Image (cartoon, rainbow, N blue to C red; front, side, top):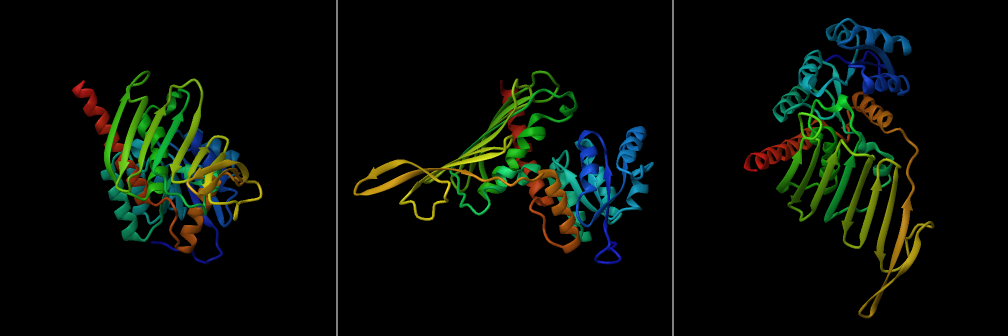
Length: 337
Protein backbone atom coordinates (compact mmCIF):
# COMPACT_ATOMS: atom_id res chain seq x y z
CA UNK A 1 0.00 0.00 0.00
CA UNK A 2 1.32 3.42 -0.94
CA UNK A 3 0.96 6.20 1.63
CA UNK A 4 0.77 9.93 1.11
CA UNK A 5 4.20 11.53 1.30
CA UNK A 6 3.05 14.11 3.87
CA UNK A 7 0.08 14.17 6.17
CA UNK A 8 -0.92 17.55 4.75
CA UNK A 9 -0.64 16.54 1.08
CA UNK A 10 -3.97 16.39 -0.77
CA UNK A 11 -5.64 13.04 -1.33
CA UNK A 12 -5.49 12.47 -5.08
CA UNK A 13 -8.83 11.02 -6.20
CA UNK A 14 -9.88 9.66 -9.58
CA UNK A 15 -13.41 8.93 -10.79
CA UNK A 16 -13.97 5.75 -12.79
CA UNK A 17 -17.17 6.12 -14.79
CA UNK A 18 -18.47 9.62 -15.45
CA UNK A 19 -22.02 9.04 -16.57
CA UNK A 20 -24.82 10.96 -14.83
CA UNK A 21 -23.81 10.07 -11.25
CA UNK A 22 -20.08 9.86 -11.92
CA UNK A 23 -20.09 13.40 -13.27
CA UNK A 24 -21.60 14.53 -9.96
CA UNK A 25 -18.83 12.70 -8.10
CA UNK A 26 -16.24 14.56 -10.18
CA UNK A 27 -17.88 17.90 -9.43
CA UNK A 28 -18.19 17.28 -5.69
CA UNK A 29 -14.67 15.91 -5.21
CA UNK A 30 -13.35 19.37 -6.09
CA UNK A 31 -15.01 20.71 -2.95
CA UNK A 32 -13.90 18.03 -0.47
CA UNK A 33 -11.39 19.43 2.01
CA UNK A 34 -7.99 17.79 1.80
CA UNK A 35 -8.74 16.11 -1.54
CA UNK A 36 -7.95 16.92 -5.16
CA UNK A 37 -9.63 15.59 -8.29
CA UNK A 38 -6.69 14.06 -10.19
CA UNK A 39 -8.56 12.74 -13.20
CA UNK A 40 -11.41 10.74 -14.69
CA UNK A 41 -11.82 7.77 -17.02
CA UNK A 42 -14.82 6.36 -18.84
CA UNK A 43 -15.62 3.64 -21.38
CA UNK A 44 -16.63 6.56 -23.63
CA UNK A 45 -13.41 8.58 -24.15
CA UNK A 46 -15.27 11.60 -25.49
CA UNK A 47 -17.48 11.68 -22.39
CA UNK A 48 -14.37 11.51 -20.19
CA UNK A 49 -12.77 14.41 -22.06
CA UNK A 50 -15.94 16.50 -21.73
CA UNK A 51 -16.24 16.00 -17.95
CA UNK A 52 -12.49 16.50 -17.47
CA UNK A 53 -12.64 19.81 -19.33
CA UNK A 54 -15.58 20.97 -17.20
CA UNK A 55 -13.61 20.36 -14.01
CA UNK A 56 -10.12 21.31 -15.17
CA UNK A 57 -8.68 17.82 -14.71
CA UNK A 58 -7.22 15.04 -16.83
CA UNK A 59 -9.06 12.42 -18.87
CA UNK A 60 -7.10 9.16 -18.79
CA UNK A 61 -7.11 6.66 -21.64
CA UNK A 62 -7.52 3.66 -19.34
CA UNK A 63 -8.15 2.62 -15.74
CA UNK A 64 -4.55 1.50 -15.26
CA UNK A 65 -3.20 4.90 -16.21
CA UNK A 66 -5.59 6.65 -13.81
CA UNK A 67 -4.69 4.28 -10.97
CA UNK A 68 -1.02 5.14 -11.37
CA UNK A 69 -1.83 8.82 -10.73
CA UNK A 70 -4.18 8.62 -7.71
CA UNK A 71 -4.41 7.53 -4.08
CA UNK A 72 -8.12 6.64 -4.13
CA UNK A 73 -11.00 6.21 -6.55
CA UNK A 74 -14.75 6.60 -6.85
CA UNK A 75 -16.15 3.66 -8.83
CA UNK A 76 -19.34 4.77 -10.54
CA UNK A 77 -19.59 2.18 -13.30
CA UNK A 78 -22.47 -0.17 -14.13
CA UNK A 79 -22.99 -2.68 -11.30
CA UNK A 80 -22.03 -5.61 -13.54
CA UNK A 81 -18.38 -4.47 -13.59
CA UNK A 82 -18.08 -3.16 -10.01
CA UNK A 83 -16.14 -6.23 -8.84
CA UNK A 84 -13.66 -6.28 -11.71
CA UNK A 85 -12.90 -2.55 -11.41
CA UNK A 86 -12.64 -2.69 -7.61
CA UNK A 87 -10.25 -5.64 -7.80
CA UNK A 88 -8.03 -3.74 -10.22
CA UNK A 89 -7.99 -0.69 -7.94
CA UNK A 90 -7.31 -2.70 -4.78
CA UNK A 91 -4.53 -4.68 -6.46
CA UNK A 92 -2.95 -1.32 -7.31
CA UNK A 93 -3.11 -0.37 -3.62
CA UNK A 94 -5.81 2.27 -4.01
CA UNK A 95 -8.58 3.07 -1.53
CA UNK A 96 -12.03 2.48 -2.98
CA UNK A 97 -15.36 4.25 -2.74
CA UNK A 98 -17.85 2.16 -4.70
CA UNK A 99 -21.43 3.07 -5.48
CA UNK A 100 -24.22 0.76 -4.35
CA UNK A 101 -24.83 -2.08 -4.74
CA UNK A 102 -21.29 -3.03 -3.80
CA UNK A 103 -21.18 -5.71 -6.51
CA UNK A 104 -23.57 -7.69 -8.69
CA UNK A 105 -23.19 -10.83 -6.52
CA UNK A 106 -22.49 -11.46 -2.84
CA UNK A 107 -19.53 -13.74 -3.60
CA UNK A 108 -17.87 -10.88 -5.48
CA UNK A 109 -18.41 -8.58 -2.49
CA UNK A 110 -16.75 -11.09 -0.17
CA UNK A 111 -13.74 -11.22 -2.47
CA UNK A 112 -13.13 -7.47 -2.63
CA UNK A 113 -13.73 -7.09 1.13
CA UNK A 114 -11.00 -9.68 1.75
CA UNK A 115 -8.67 -7.89 -0.65
CA UNK A 116 -9.23 -4.53 1.06
CA UNK A 117 -8.77 -6.01 4.54
CA UNK A 118 -5.56 -7.80 3.62
CA UNK A 119 -4.11 -4.65 2.06
CA UNK A 120 -5.29 -2.31 4.83
CA UNK A 121 -7.29 -0.22 2.37
CA UNK A 122 -10.54 1.69 2.94
CA UNK A 123 -13.55 0.22 1.14
CA UNK A 124 -16.69 2.35 1.48
CA UNK A 125 -20.04 1.73 -0.22
CA UNK A 126 -22.24 4.55 -1.49
CA UNK A 127 -25.46 3.93 0.41
CA UNK A 128 -26.26 7.62 0.24
CA UNK A 129 -29.45 7.57 2.35
CA UNK A 130 -27.33 6.97 5.46
CA UNK A 131 -26.18 10.57 4.93
CA UNK A 132 -29.60 11.96 4.06
CA UNK A 133 -30.40 14.98 6.29
CA UNK A 134 -33.59 13.22 7.45
CA UNK A 135 -31.67 10.16 8.65
CA UNK A 136 -28.99 12.41 10.15
CA UNK A 137 -31.72 14.18 12.17
CA UNK A 138 -32.36 10.93 14.04
CA UNK A 139 -28.85 10.73 15.42
CA UNK A 140 -28.92 10.84 19.20
CA UNK A 141 -32.48 9.54 19.39
CA UNK A 142 -33.23 6.14 20.90
CA UNK A 143 -34.40 3.98 18.00
CA UNK A 144 -35.69 0.48 18.68
CA UNK A 145 -38.38 -0.04 16.02
CA UNK A 146 -40.66 -3.05 16.22
CA UNK A 147 -42.39 -2.41 12.89
CA UNK A 148 -40.96 -0.59 9.87
CA UNK A 149 -42.75 0.29 6.66
CA UNK A 150 -40.88 1.72 3.67
CA UNK A 151 -42.01 2.92 0.24
CA UNK A 152 -39.48 3.82 -2.44
CA UNK A 153 -41.23 4.66 -5.70
CA UNK A 154 -39.68 6.20 -8.80
CA UNK A 155 -40.62 7.05 -12.33
CA UNK A 156 -39.26 4.85 -15.10
CA UNK A 157 -35.69 5.59 -16.26
CA UNK A 158 -34.30 3.27 -18.96
CA UNK A 159 -30.72 3.76 -17.75
CA UNK A 160 -31.50 2.05 -14.44
CA UNK A 161 -32.81 -1.26 -15.78
CA UNK A 162 -29.52 -3.21 -15.87
CA UNK A 163 -30.47 -4.60 -12.43
CA UNK A 164 -33.79 -5.49 -10.78
CA UNK A 165 -35.58 -2.86 -8.70
CA UNK A 166 -34.51 -4.76 -5.58
CA UNK A 167 -30.86 -3.90 -6.31
CA UNK A 168 -31.62 -0.50 -7.83
CA UNK A 169 -33.99 1.01 -5.25
CA UNK A 170 -35.04 -1.39 -2.47
CA UNK A 171 -31.44 -1.98 -1.42
CA UNK A 172 -31.37 1.59 -0.02
CA UNK A 173 -34.07 0.66 2.49
CA UNK A 174 -32.57 -2.77 3.16
CA UNK A 175 -29.35 -1.04 4.23
CA UNK A 176 -31.20 1.52 6.37
CA UNK A 177 -33.31 -1.14 8.07
CA UNK A 178 -30.30 -3.35 8.81
CA UNK A 179 -28.61 -0.31 10.37
CA UNK A 180 -31.72 0.49 12.44
CA UNK A 181 -32.46 -3.03 13.69
CA UNK A 182 -28.90 -4.29 14.20
CA UNK A 183 -30.40 -7.77 14.11
CA UNK A 184 -30.36 -10.91 11.98
CA UNK A 185 -33.12 -11.65 9.47
CA UNK A 186 -34.91 -14.82 10.60
CA UNK A 187 -37.72 -15.01 8.03
CA UNK A 188 -38.24 -13.49 4.62
CA UNK A 189 -41.12 -13.36 2.17
CA UNK A 190 -41.15 -11.50 -1.13
CA UNK A 191 -42.94 -11.10 -4.43
CA UNK A 192 -42.30 -9.03 -7.53
CA UNK A 193 -43.13 -8.63 -11.20
CA UNK A 194 -41.57 -7.39 -14.43
CA UNK A 195 -43.67 -4.79 -16.22
CA UNK A 196 -41.61 -2.72 -18.66
CA UNK A 197 -38.16 -4.32 -18.50
CA UNK A 198 -36.62 -7.80 -18.48
CA UNK A 199 -35.95 -7.56 -14.74
CA UNK A 200 -38.19 -7.05 -11.69
CA UNK A 201 -39.78 -3.56 -11.76
CA UNK A 202 -42.03 -3.77 -8.68
CA UNK A 203 -41.21 -5.72 -5.51
CA UNK A 204 -42.46 -6.16 -1.97
CA UNK A 205 -40.64 -7.89 0.86
CA UNK A 206 -41.49 -8.75 4.46
CA UNK A 207 -38.54 -9.26 6.80
CA UNK A 208 -38.69 -10.62 10.33
CA UNK A 209 -35.73 -10.10 12.64
CA UNK A 210 -34.38 -11.95 15.68
CA UNK A 211 -35.17 -8.82 17.72
CA UNK A 212 -38.89 -9.26 16.94
CA UNK A 213 -38.97 -6.34 14.53
CA UNK A 214 -40.92 -6.76 11.30
CA UNK A 215 -40.21 -4.68 8.19
CA UNK A 216 -42.40 -4.32 5.13
CA UNK A 217 -40.61 -2.88 2.06
CA UNK A 218 -42.11 -1.80 -1.27
CA UNK A 219 -40.10 -0.58 -4.25
CA UNK A 220 -41.25 0.40 -7.74
CA UNK A 221 -39.59 2.14 -10.66
CA UNK A 222 -42.71 2.59 -12.77
CA UNK A 223 -44.71 4.90 -10.52
CA UNK A 224 -46.40 8.09 -11.62
CA UNK A 225 -45.08 9.96 -8.60
CA UNK A 226 -41.86 9.61 -6.66
CA UNK A 227 -41.82 8.65 -2.99
CA UNK A 228 -39.03 7.90 -0.51
CA UNK A 229 -40.67 7.41 2.87
CA UNK A 230 -40.15 5.23 5.90
CA UNK A 231 -42.28 4.86 9.02
CA UNK A 232 -40.95 3.50 12.31
CA UNK A 233 -43.23 2.19 15.05
CA UNK A 234 -41.73 1.50 18.45
CA UNK A 235 -42.89 1.47 22.03
CA UNK A 236 -44.25 4.92 22.88
CA UNK A 237 -43.24 6.48 19.53
CA UNK A 238 -44.13 6.77 15.85
CA UNK A 239 -41.57 8.33 13.50
CA UNK A 240 -42.27 9.36 9.90
CA UNK A 241 -39.23 9.95 7.66
CA UNK A 242 -39.44 11.61 4.26
CA UNK A 243 -36.09 11.26 2.51
CA UNK A 244 -37.20 13.39 -0.45
CA UNK A 245 -38.22 16.53 1.49
CA UNK A 246 -36.18 15.82 3.70
CA UNK A 247 -38.17 15.86 6.97
CA UNK A 248 -38.82 13.86 10.15
CA UNK A 249 -41.99 13.91 12.25
CA UNK A 250 -42.04 12.26 15.66
CA UNK A 251 -45.08 11.45 17.78
CA UNK A 252 -44.30 10.29 21.32
CA UNK A 253 -46.09 9.22 24.48
CA UNK A 254 -44.34 10.70 27.52
CA UNK A 255 -44.83 10.64 31.23
CA UNK A 256 -44.63 14.43 31.21
CA UNK A 257 -43.17 17.33 29.22
CA UNK A 258 -39.83 17.37 31.03
CA UNK A 259 -36.91 17.19 28.63
CA UNK A 260 -39.10 18.12 25.68
CA UNK A 261 -37.66 20.42 23.02
CA UNK A 262 -39.04 23.95 22.88
CA UNK A 263 -40.66 23.13 19.53
CA UNK A 264 -42.48 20.09 20.92
CA UNK A 265 -46.28 20.38 20.74
CA UNK A 266 -48.65 18.86 23.30
CA UNK A 267 -51.40 17.01 21.43
CA UNK A 268 -53.33 15.47 24.29
CA UNK A 269 -53.28 13.06 27.19
CA UNK A 270 -53.92 9.36 27.80
CA UNK A 271 -55.41 7.95 31.00
CA UNK A 272 -53.82 4.64 32.04
CA UNK A 273 -55.33 3.68 35.36
CA UNK A 274 -54.13 6.20 37.92
CA UNK A 275 -51.35 7.39 35.59
CA UNK A 276 -51.80 10.12 32.99
CA UNK A 277 -49.37 10.37 30.06
CA UNK A 278 -49.09 13.00 27.35
CA UNK A 279 -48.92 12.74 23.56
CA UNK A 280 -46.44 15.07 21.86
CA UNK A 281 -45.51 15.99 18.29
CA UNK A 282 -42.17 17.30 17.11
CA UNK A 283 -40.73 18.06 13.69
CA UNK A 284 -37.03 17.37 14.00
CA UNK A 285 -34.56 19.90 12.59
CA UNK A 286 -32.68 18.55 9.57
CA UNK A 287 -29.16 19.71 8.68
CA UNK A 288 -28.67 21.63 5.44
CA UNK A 289 -26.17 19.24 3.87
CA UNK A 290 -25.49 17.49 0.57
CA UNK A 291 -25.62 13.73 1.26
CA UNK A 292 -23.21 12.73 -1.51
CA UNK A 293 -20.72 15.42 -0.56
CA UNK A 294 -20.92 14.26 3.05
CA UNK A 295 -20.21 10.62 2.24
CA UNK A 296 -17.29 11.54 -0.02
CA UNK A 297 -15.87 13.69 2.77
CA UNK A 298 -16.24 10.79 5.22
CA UNK A 299 -14.40 8.51 2.78
CA UNK A 300 -11.54 11.01 2.46
CA UNK A 301 -11.36 11.34 6.24
CA UNK A 302 -11.31 7.55 6.68
CA UNK A 303 -8.39 7.31 4.24
CA UNK A 304 -6.43 10.07 5.95
CA UNK A 305 -7.09 9.08 9.58
CA UNK A 306 -7.61 5.33 9.43
CA UNK A 307 -11.10 5.67 10.89
CA UNK A 308 -13.93 3.41 9.81
CA UNK A 309 -16.64 4.87 7.54
CA UNK A 310 -20.21 4.23 8.62
CA UNK A 311 -20.98 2.24 5.44
CA UNK A 312 -18.17 -0.28 5.23
CA UNK A 313 -17.71 -2.96 2.61
CA UNK A 314 -19.25 -5.39 5.10
CA UNK A 315 -22.34 -3.19 5.47
CA UNK A 316 -22.73 -3.07 1.71
CA UNK A 317 -22.28 -6.83 1.44
CA UNK A 318 -24.93 -7.54 4.08
CA UNK A 319 -27.45 -5.36 2.25
CA UNK A 320 -26.61 -7.21 -0.96
CA UNK A 321 -26.95 -10.60 0.74
CA UNK A 322 -30.47 -9.79 1.93
CA UNK A 323 -31.33 -8.35 -1.50
CA UNK A 324 -30.19 -11.61 -3.12
CA UNK A 325 -32.39 -13.60 -0.72
CA UNK A 326 -35.33 -11.42 -1.71
CA UNK A 327 -34.59 -12.02 -5.39
CA UNK A 328 -34.39 -15.79 -4.84
CA UNK A 329 -37.73 -15.74 -3.04
CA UNK A 330 -39.33 -13.76 -5.88
CA UNK A 331 -37.94 -16.26 -8.40
CA UNK A 332 -39.13 -19.20 -6.29
CA UNK A 333 -42.65 -17.86 -6.12
CA UNK A 334 -42.63 -17.23 -9.88
CA UNK A 335 -41.68 -20.86 -10.54
CA UNK A 336 -44.34 -22.18 -8.14
CA UNK A 337 -46.99 -19.96 -9.78
